Length: 141
Image (cartoon, rainbow, N blue to C red; front, top):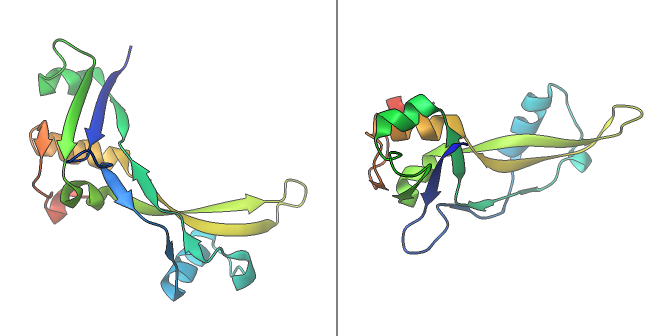
């Protein structure tokens, strides 16, 4: 059995939404820094893959017990505003690598949810079921 927190958006919208967008020199720098090499521009995808999701995050039993929301069910729904959840989107670099040579054929940036930071901020906010106050800068990893 797992204890699951389901983060949902308000007004029947995805909890976390960021559309695809083009990258510029900052994105190129992010890719090169993450890979530790000077990859050529023709191998970097020009678009950042966006994200649309309602994260279901498994939490530890001790966290579930502290929240008091899990007494009758192993799942809890948290309705959160975008102003809260947008703080937990991280840009991550991915690659397509040749299995034989190890050469990087392409690289791209995609948005991911930092689940550990999201759960930590939810705990720091007092385990709210309706979460509409953005976390402070100190509460974000």
